[in-house]
Length: 288
Image (cartoon, rainbow, N blue to C red; front, top):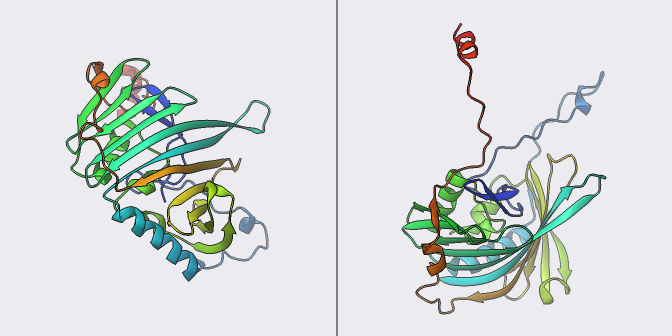
Protein backbone atom coordinates (compact mmCIF):
# COMPACT_ATOMS: atom_id res chain seq x y z
CA UNK A 1 0.00 0.00 0.00
CA UNK A 2 1.16 3.39 -0.71
CA UNK A 3 1.22 6.85 0.96
CA UNK A 4 -0.86 9.32 -0.66
CA UNK A 5 -0.19 13.20 -0.62
CA UNK A 6 -2.52 15.26 1.61
CA UNK A 7 -3.31 17.69 -1.23
CA UNK A 8 -3.63 17.26 -4.99
CA UNK A 9 -1.87 20.18 -6.59
CA UNK A 10 -2.39 21.42 -10.11
CA UNK A 11 0.55 23.71 -10.94
CA UNK A 12 0.42 25.39 -7.59
CA UNK A 13 -3.39 25.15 -7.14
CA UNK A 14 -4.18 23.03 -4.08
CA UNK A 15 -6.72 20.34 -4.98
CA UNK A 16 -7.70 18.74 -1.68
CA UNK A 17 -7.30 14.97 -1.58
CA UNK A 18 -7.33 12.34 1.19
CA UNK A 19 -4.28 10.18 1.62
CA UNK A 20 -5.21 6.62 2.67
CA UNK A 21 -3.40 3.72 1.15
CA UNK A 22 0.01 4.59 -0.36
CA UNK A 23 0.34 3.94 -4.08
CA UNK A 24 3.13 1.73 -5.27
CA UNK A 25 4.44 3.96 -8.04
CA UNK A 26 4.96 7.12 -6.01
CA UNK A 27 5.31 5.66 -2.57
CA UNK A 28 7.35 7.77 -0.18
CA UNK A 29 9.95 6.14 2.00
CA UNK A 30 9.08 5.70 5.65
CA UNK A 31 10.35 8.32 8.04
CA UNK A 32 9.54 6.19 11.06
CA UNK A 33 12.40 6.04 13.55
CA UNK A 34 13.29 3.14 15.81
CA UNK A 35 11.85 3.25 19.30
CA UNK A 36 13.96 5.13 21.81
CA UNK A 37 12.95 2.73 24.58
CA UNK A 38 15.68 0.24 23.73
CA UNK A 39 18.32 2.94 24.14
CA UNK A 40 17.63 3.36 27.85
CA UNK A 41 20.41 2.30 30.19
CA UNK A 42 20.36 -1.41 30.82
CA UNK A 43 17.77 -2.13 28.12
CA UNK A 44 18.27 -5.34 26.11
CA UNK A 45 19.50 -5.18 22.56
CA UNK A 46 16.90 -4.79 19.82
CA UNK A 47 15.14 -8.02 18.92
CA UNK A 48 15.61 -9.62 15.53
CA UNK A 49 13.14 -8.77 12.78
CA UNK A 50 9.78 -10.37 13.52
CA UNK A 51 8.59 -12.80 10.87
CA UNK A 52 5.38 -11.78 9.03
CA UNK A 53 2.11 -13.22 10.37
CA UNK A 54 -0.32 -13.58 7.51
CA UNK A 55 -3.75 -15.08 8.16
CA UNK A 56 -4.67 -17.32 5.17
CA UNK A 57 -8.36 -16.37 5.39
CA UNK A 58 -7.56 -12.67 5.30
CA UNK A 59 -5.10 -13.16 2.44
CA UNK A 60 -7.76 -15.06 0.47
CA UNK A 61 -10.20 -12.17 0.91
CA UNK A 62 -7.65 -9.64 -0.32
CA UNK A 63 -6.81 -11.82 -3.31
CA UNK A 64 -10.51 -12.30 -4.17
CA UNK A 65 -11.06 -8.53 -4.03
CA UNK A 66 -8.03 -7.95 -6.26
CA UNK A 67 -9.16 -10.54 -8.79
CA UNK A 68 -12.64 -9.01 -8.99
CA UNK A 69 -11.25 -5.54 -9.62
CA UNK A 70 -8.53 -6.65 -12.04
CA UNK A 71 -10.98 -8.71 -14.10
CA UNK A 72 -13.32 -5.77 -14.72
CA UNK A 73 -12.72 -4.26 -18.16
CA UNK A 74 -14.64 -1.15 -17.15
CA UNK A 75 -15.92 0.15 -13.83
CA UNK A 76 -17.28 3.22 -12.13
CA UNK A 77 -17.76 4.06 -8.47
CA UNK A 78 -18.09 6.95 -6.03
CA UNK A 79 -15.58 7.70 -3.28
CA UNK A 80 -16.14 9.72 -0.12
CA UNK A 81 -12.73 10.51 1.37
CA UNK A 82 -12.22 11.86 4.89
CA UNK A 83 -8.89 13.16 6.17
CA UNK A 84 -8.18 14.34 9.70
CA UNK A 85 -6.00 17.40 10.18
CA UNK A 86 -4.78 19.01 13.45
CA UNK A 87 -6.82 21.93 14.74
CA UNK A 88 -5.58 24.97 16.65
CA UNK A 89 -6.94 23.49 19.85
CA UNK A 90 -5.56 19.97 19.45
CA UNK A 91 -8.44 17.62 18.50
CA UNK A 92 -8.43 16.89 14.76
CA UNK A 93 -10.72 18.44 12.17
CA UNK A 94 -12.15 16.34 9.33
CA UNK A 95 -12.01 17.37 5.67
CA UNK A 96 -13.92 15.48 2.99
CA UNK A 97 -13.90 15.16 -0.78
CA UNK A 98 -16.28 13.35 -3.11
CA UNK A 99 -15.01 11.75 -6.32
CA UNK A 100 -16.82 10.09 -9.20
CA UNK A 101 -14.48 7.64 -10.91
CA UNK A 102 -14.74 5.96 -14.32
CA UNK A 103 -12.11 3.53 -15.58
CA UNK A 104 -11.66 1.46 -18.71
CA UNK A 105 -8.71 -0.91 -18.76
CA UNK A 106 -5.96 -0.72 -19.77
CA UNK A 107 -5.66 2.94 -20.70
CA UNK A 108 -8.55 5.24 -19.73
CA UNK A 109 -9.41 7.02 -16.48
CA UNK A 110 -11.61 9.92 -15.35
CA UNK A 111 -11.80 11.34 -11.81
CA UNK A 112 -14.21 14.20 -11.07
CA UNK A 113 -13.65 15.52 -7.52
CA UNK A 114 -16.00 17.85 -5.66
CA UNK A 115 -16.70 18.45 -1.98
CA UNK A 116 -14.64 20.43 0.51
CA UNK A 117 -11.91 22.39 -1.21
CA UNK A 118 -11.40 23.28 -4.90
CA UNK A 119 -13.07 21.05 -7.47
CA UNK A 120 -10.80 19.17 -9.87
CA UNK A 121 -11.07 16.94 -12.91
CA UNK A 122 -8.52 14.43 -14.16
CA UNK A 123 -8.66 12.79 -17.59
CA UNK A 124 -6.44 10.14 -19.13
CA UNK A 125 -7.16 8.71 -22.59
CA UNK A 126 -4.18 6.43 -23.19
CA UNK A 127 -2.08 9.16 -24.81
CA UNK A 128 -2.37 12.27 -22.69
CA UNK A 129 -3.35 13.18 -19.14
CA UNK A 130 -5.13 16.39 -18.20
CA UNK A 131 -5.75 18.06 -14.85
CA UNK A 132 -8.50 20.68 -14.95
CA UNK A 133 -9.39 23.27 -12.28
CA UNK A 134 -12.91 24.38 -13.33
CA UNK A 135 -13.25 27.34 -10.94
CA UNK A 136 -10.00 28.87 -12.22
CA UNK A 137 -10.54 27.61 -15.79
CA UNK A 138 -6.98 26.29 -15.92
CA UNK A 139 -5.80 23.02 -17.42
CA UNK A 140 -2.48 21.20 -17.54
CA UNK A 141 -1.95 18.67 -20.34
CA UNK A 142 0.97 16.30 -20.84
CA UNK A 143 1.87 13.15 -22.74
CA UNK A 144 1.30 10.02 -20.67
CA UNK A 145 2.37 6.34 -20.70
CA UNK A 146 0.06 3.79 -22.39
CA UNK A 147 -1.32 2.23 -19.19
CA UNK A 148 -3.30 3.46 -16.19
CA UNK A 149 -0.53 2.37 -13.83
CA UNK A 150 2.02 4.35 -15.80
CA UNK A 151 -0.22 7.41 -16.01
CA UNK A 152 -0.81 7.41 -12.26
CA UNK A 153 2.92 7.35 -11.61
CA UNK A 154 3.53 10.07 -14.19
CA UNK A 155 0.85 12.28 -12.61
CA UNK A 156 2.45 11.84 -9.21
CA UNK A 157 5.99 12.40 -10.41
CA UNK A 158 5.17 15.50 -12.46
CA UNK A 159 2.54 17.20 -10.29
CA UNK A 160 2.14 15.27 -6.99
CA UNK A 161 -1.35 14.25 -8.13
CA UNK A 162 -2.41 11.21 -6.14
CA UNK A 163 -5.80 9.66 -5.47
CA UNK A 164 -6.75 7.96 -2.18
CA UNK A 165 -8.18 4.99 -4.09
CA UNK A 166 -5.15 4.27 -6.29
CA UNK A 167 -4.89 0.67 -5.08
CA UNK A 168 -8.30 0.01 -6.66
CA UNK A 169 -7.27 1.42 -10.04
CA UNK A 170 -4.01 -0.43 -10.71
CA UNK A 171 -3.76 -3.57 -12.81
CA UNK A 172 -2.85 -5.80 -9.84
CA UNK A 173 -4.37 -4.44 -6.59
CA UNK A 174 -3.14 -7.36 -4.48
CA UNK A 175 0.47 -6.73 -5.47
CA UNK A 176 0.13 -3.15 -4.23
CA UNK A 177 -1.50 -4.20 -0.97
CA UNK A 178 0.77 -7.15 -0.22
CA UNK A 179 4.17 -5.50 -0.62
CA UNK A 180 5.93 -5.34 2.75
CA UNK A 181 3.03 -6.69 4.79
CA UNK A 182 3.89 -7.70 8.36
CA UNK A 183 0.45 -8.58 9.71
CA UNK A 184 -2.84 -9.56 8.07
CA UNK A 185 -5.76 -11.02 9.97
CA UNK A 186 -9.51 -11.56 9.71
CA UNK A 187 -11.68 -9.57 12.13
CA UNK A 188 -15.24 -10.69 11.42
CA UNK A 189 -18.33 -9.49 9.55
CA UNK A 190 -20.29 -6.26 9.53
CA UNK A 191 -23.83 -5.67 8.27
CA UNK A 192 -23.62 -1.87 8.47
CA UNK A 193 -20.89 -0.59 6.14
CA UNK A 194 -21.86 -0.12 2.51
CA UNK A 195 -25.43 -1.27 3.08
CA UNK A 196 -24.39 -4.90 2.73
CA UNK A 197 -22.60 -7.68 4.57
CA UNK A 198 -18.84 -7.19 4.57
CA UNK A 199 -15.81 -9.11 5.79
CA UNK A 200 -13.38 -7.04 7.83
CA UNK A 201 -9.63 -7.48 7.40
CA UNK A 202 -6.79 -5.71 9.23
CA UNK A 203 -3.33 -5.36 7.77
CA UNK A 204 -0.10 -3.60 8.65
CA UNK A 205 3.37 -3.03 7.33
CA UNK A 206 6.17 -1.01 8.90
CA UNK A 207 4.42 2.30 8.13
CA UNK A 208 0.66 1.90 8.16
CA UNK A 209 -2.15 0.05 9.91
CA UNK A 210 -5.36 -0.29 7.89
CA UNK A 211 -8.75 -1.92 8.18
CA UNK A 212 -10.71 -2.94 5.09
CA UNK A 213 -14.39 -3.81 4.68
CA UNK A 214 -14.86 -6.14 1.67
CA UNK A 215 -18.27 -7.16 0.31
CA UNK A 216 -18.97 -10.73 1.42
CA UNK A 217 -20.78 -11.56 -1.82
CA UNK A 218 -19.40 -9.24 -4.48
CA UNK A 219 -15.80 -8.99 -3.09
CA UNK A 220 -15.72 -5.24 -3.75
CA UNK A 221 -14.08 -2.81 -1.32
CA UNK A 222 -16.59 -0.82 0.71
CA UNK A 223 -14.43 1.11 3.15
CA UNK A 224 -10.80 1.55 4.20
CA UNK A 225 -9.51 3.23 7.37
CA UNK A 226 -5.81 3.84 7.90
CA UNK A 227 -3.41 5.27 10.48
CA UNK A 228 0.23 5.93 9.67
CA UNK A 229 2.53 4.57 12.36
CA UNK A 230 5.07 7.36 11.96
CA UNK A 231 2.42 10.01 12.62
CA UNK A 232 2.66 11.09 16.28
CA UNK A 233 -0.92 12.43 16.17
CA UNK A 234 -2.29 9.13 14.80
CA UNK A 235 -4.62 11.02 12.48
CA UNK A 236 -7.17 8.79 10.77
CA UNK A 237 -7.85 8.65 7.07
CA UNK A 238 -10.89 6.96 5.55
CA UNK A 239 -12.23 6.10 2.11
CA UNK A 240 -15.81 4.90 1.51
CA UNK A 241 -16.78 3.29 -1.81
CA UNK A 242 -20.32 3.22 -3.20
CA UNK A 243 -22.37 2.97 -6.40
CA UNK A 244 -20.20 0.26 -7.92
CA UNK A 245 -20.86 -0.56 -11.60
CA UNK A 246 -18.65 -3.16 -13.30
CA UNK A 247 -18.35 -3.84 -17.03
CA UNK A 248 -21.10 -1.44 -18.01
CA UNK A 249 -21.12 0.57 -21.23
CA UNK A 250 -18.82 3.61 -21.16
CA UNK A 251 -19.53 6.54 -23.51
CA UNK A 252 -16.79 7.14 -26.05
CA UNK A 253 -16.40 10.77 -24.91
CA UNK A 254 -16.18 9.92 -21.18
CA UNK A 255 -12.46 10.62 -20.97
CA UNK A 256 -12.40 14.18 -22.21
CA UNK A 257 -14.23 17.43 -21.49
CA UNK A 258 -15.25 20.11 -24.00
CA UNK A 259 -15.17 22.72 -21.23
CA UNK A 260 -11.68 21.68 -20.15
CA UNK A 261 -10.47 21.78 -23.75
CA UNK A 262 -11.18 25.52 -23.86
CA UNK A 263 -9.42 26.34 -20.58
CA UNK A 264 -6.19 28.31 -20.24
CA UNK A 265 -3.15 26.04 -20.57
CA UNK A 266 -0.54 25.80 -17.83
CA UNK A 267 2.29 23.35 -17.17
CA UNK A 268 2.17 20.40 -14.80
CA UNK A 269 4.32 21.24 -11.78
CA UNK A 270 4.99 19.75 -8.37
CA UNK A 271 4.21 21.86 -5.29
CA UNK A 272 7.59 21.12 -3.70
CA UNK A 273 9.10 24.19 -1.99
CA UNK A 274 11.67 25.99 -4.14
CA UNK A 275 14.83 26.92 -2.20
CA UNK A 276 15.79 30.60 -2.36
CA UNK A 277 18.54 31.37 -4.89
CA UNK A 278 21.99 31.33 -3.37
CA UNK A 279 23.79 34.64 -3.13
CA UNK A 280 27.18 35.06 -4.80
CA UNK A 281 28.83 35.11 -1.39
CA UNK A 282 27.01 31.96 -0.28
CA UNK A 283 27.88 30.17 -3.50
CA UNK A 284 31.57 30.96 -3.06
CA UNK A 285 31.54 29.73 0.53
CA UNK A 286 30.03 26.40 -0.55
CA UNK A 287 32.77 25.86 -3.10
CA UNK A 288 35.55 26.28 -0.55
